[in-house]
Length: 279
Length: 291
Image 1 (cartoon, rainbow over the protein chains, first blue to last red):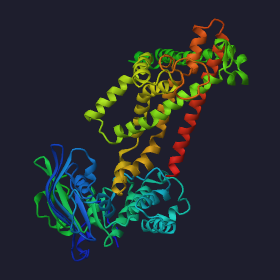
Image 2: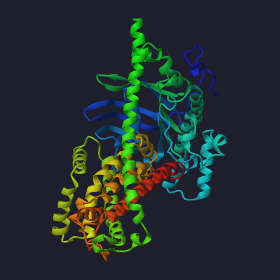
Image 3: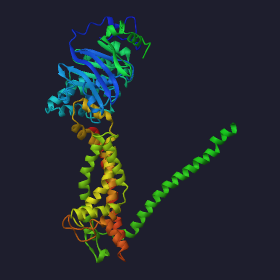
Image 4: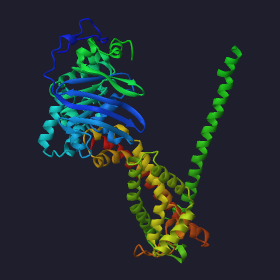
């Protein structure tokens, strides 16, 4: 249940204090001393953090501090960028993620991703969901149809599109397209979802709808979300991590429960950032 | 100040706009008029010669009489060899350039530069190369095969570059999002990138085929000018453009049939253009709703 917080978000009655602890924290993704370079240029350096299972973790910080790079290293999308080097260790539920022998196809099924700009394929709404399922070996027509309906209901799109599943996905509104992309990721039943500013390209109304949806994913999926919207992070996150550029590379300044990071920041930089003085 | 305003926004600007309009319109009119005049000339002199017999009968008396049946067959065969060879190589190279090398890589830059130089090489040079390599070194002789292969070399640069452009117009997000969904690069290529690149491919095909079907210099040295009906790809065969050249330059009294052959060539070109743009339209529409 999300109380209606004004956009400014910083209110004396901020719901953070009332929010029950998400659950007994169980680390799902454990990152140790992770660094990433694009050629010679460091994106972030020496990041150590645990992402807890079933919780929403928000990554905040100014632009260019390596949040998105950090996110893409978790599903090895960094493999696609020429000259990108990742060092350190990432363990996902015990699996060594950076091991060259790790099956990236399987990994990316387990860790879905939502991008900043909605990017449905130039196919019909139905095909957008069926195509990845088919390619991952699901052949049974009824099962495919059932999955399509389930995930569309999950993202609250079913009633809006059930009569026009064969029309082009690109004809949907921006918010609907983003929800379709979420459905597409959910269709592969991932365990974790990486979201790179999923609301920033949307109008406020659609943004609210998508945000509610993310809150609804809590407990079922491990969600890691990059956001520039501090108010949004306060509203939805269980855990928060602040990145900042120091010595020419992104660094993890502080990580903890959202309540601690936003109300009792230990680092002066965090304090300045969450109070709106810096960043 | 006031005078200046009136001047710059009033009459003088109108005059300049008018001049610009006249220039632009007359340039367009000139281009259109040239095309219409050319078409009219060919139609005027050639249409009366066109008949079913002309299209199917073999040429007699050095082409002054008879028809162009064997010539159309040779042209089609040469074009078939050219496309059969250049399409797979062209698409393959374009995929390699656009999807598997970066724009700045040494290999990509070198290949692209070579292609750009190749596409500017005069056709007579291709003809001499084809004669030396395909006819002599590979021992294919003056044959439809030699001609088709030489044309393939000519068409490839255009085909590769425009197909590559087609691939590059596909937004990078598609590649990222398919990767993030755990889909392989080949799946992405066949289901998303290739359909999206089809319009670019077709543009290259139209330009390439246009260049190939109108080619004379390169074919005289490679496929020869025997006007009999070819029996195999290793036979010499005369292409339409070579036939037109021969009739108008070497055969006194061959003008009428030269015009008629030119008319057939122009109609073929227009038809290929039309089919390709219809296909491009069709693919653009189709790829939105199906995989």
